[in-house]
Amino acid sequence: MNETPKTSRRGFLAGAIAAGGATVAAKANAAGDPAITELQDWSVALGEGVDARPYGYPSEYEAHVKRRSVEWLTADPVSSVNFTPLHELDGIITPNGLCFERHHAGIADVDPAKYRLMINGLVDTPLVFTLQDLMRFPRENRVHFLECAANSGMEWRGAQLNGCQFTHGMIHNVMYTGVPLRYLLETAGVKTNGKWIMPEGADASAMTRSIPIEKAMDDCLVAFKMNGEALRPEQGYPVRLVVPGWEGNMWVKWMRRIEVGDQPWHHREETSKYTDLFKDGKARRFTWEMDAKSVITNPSPQSPILHKSGPTVLTGVAWSGRGTIPRVDVSIDGGKNWAEARMSGPSLDKSMHRFYYEFDWDGSPLLLQSRAHDSTGYVQPTKSELRAIRGENSIYHNNGIQTWYVNEKGIAENVEVS
Image: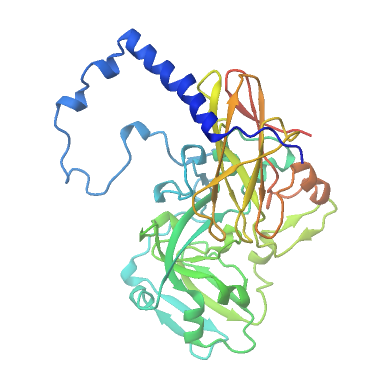
């Protein structure tokens, strides 16, 4: 693997001070910048008291940081999707109010006092739980990503959407609190021929999915909290299923029933809807796990480089449905040369990982790419490598390397390189 020279952190900091801080300070002193030489309104007037905002919300200057939809993407906004603003975030935790939404029949408005979860089918004792019943079980806290199988789906046939919010924003990463599903299944007593479960949502689409009993007993969670607070209505309030590392359509929201059976539910649309179609017409079925993937969030089309040259910080996120991300490579020349990025923050199983790469930009055009390595040894492929095997007929499970072209003005756009 070719390597580009890695800028030392000490050298980068020294360069940043020389090129950025000292220069800016000199300009401010010379010009008498009123932003620092004069008292501002917030320095001379009293602000709101502690009870003015009983539920906190972001600064008015951050009003542009929000989920966004693509109007032409679906026929109706009720059964549609909006996207997480990845380019506005840092770290690995997605704020609850920015987690993308995907609905098949709109947001269900469920009264928690009337909420019930049934377990039936091939069990010794069919059971019905209230929300309070669920909260009496031992609970766990886990940080996981949730990614829609169609994330990046528009890109199979080439660069389509200009912004990582739209190419990669059908994902979020939060801390879930809930009851391991196996506790509930063990309480009901799964019969020996119980090999599959079918969770069902309480929304008007009655969303159902088939999940092998091995996965259900392994790490699935019946969650009622998200980043410490109750689930938001658009995220499945009061209870949703968490299926770590597996495609998001299986994370059934507003979950009302779990049926245990001896086979997947072949007669239902759900077992054939999310398949990966090859160019010869054949399809991969039961491709649940999400492969290792990454994206550079800054710079990117919605987040240009605002300085002309000098010390520059590149950052992004990487994740894998099969484990952790010990390493991410970054290229600034379209994959000709690669350098190892700096990982920062916790490395958790089936969770987002944050990476950074600091370099001196000389003002010339860039072709930015990132390449994730997961803990199984899997390496994120190029889009060409994916298409060579799977063609261009699918819209699911596109984990190919993303490329941003950055011009001399720092403006970025979605492109493809061979």
